[in-house]
Length: 226
Image (cartoon, rainbow, N blue to C red; front, top):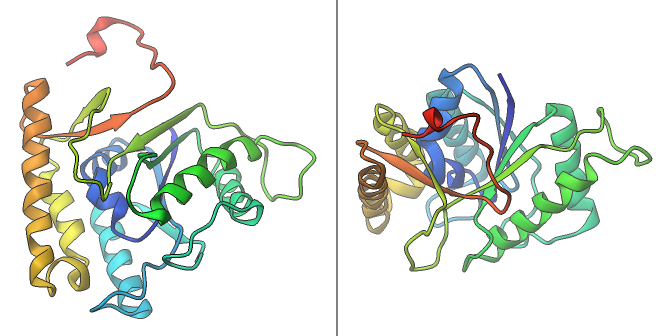
């Protein structure tokens, strides 16, 4: 089993982008940690205390652990300090696989988060650096889609999440201040469900989630393919 770190700019980004995969990985016995860069607040209907409770509930639904390093929401910047905070989590978790948001996005926090995480992956392996934990270089870095751009994801691999659609949906609506109370955001849940079905249809399954990698994935045999 692997130690897996899933980094999100705000609580709910991981659930929106890959909630089904997160639940599946947890059920398979992997040690999954969600890392929130910010607490996600302020928002029109939320507050830090309520958002923290919602994030904890979503993590409970997905059966994973969760942490937040509390960078300022809407002001995430690619700095050495931010890189080292993430690198410290990578080392403490001994993350072998890291998931981050897709690198093209309309939201500055998302773009900055991914750049921070990419560089933190490198920093985490350094030996002569003042960081806790044992040096490690995560073997895999994958991108999930939680983009604010109005375009269709163009992934290079999909994960079958058949049977995990309800867990994903429940983890999203756990954020009542984001997707239940604001009427205009309720349709996001339906968009996500439709996307799950669409990507599932591309590989002949009921539901799937899209991912992107800049590095080639190795297969031991073609039996790994759906």
